[in-house]
Image (cartoon, rainbow, N blue to C red; front, top):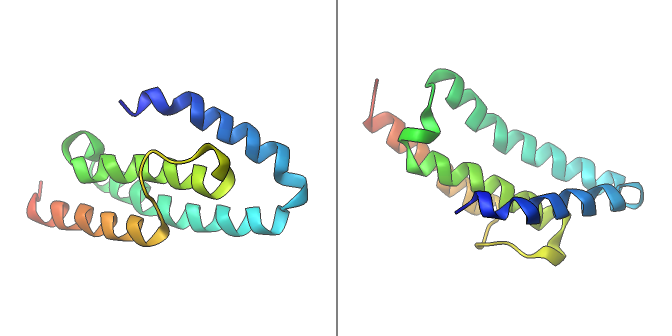
Length: 104
């Protein structure tokens, strides 16, 4: 179901590139915030291969990151679900809880 969203994600990417020159400072702030949120998932994936396939919370977190990217860089396209930094952090707490309950 999430893969069907790729055309919208590509439109969001195009939108971001088209507007980059006028909003560089804001783009940098958003990019840094996204990088920090995404780093959590990458680190967890390095520690536990296939995390997204076994942990629904991690899979949702991954797609929430994509939706958050759209909300930051192409608001006019809308998001599939409500998403914010606060919601992402709450979702990440669910990932951490799952990992602690399911040790290797």
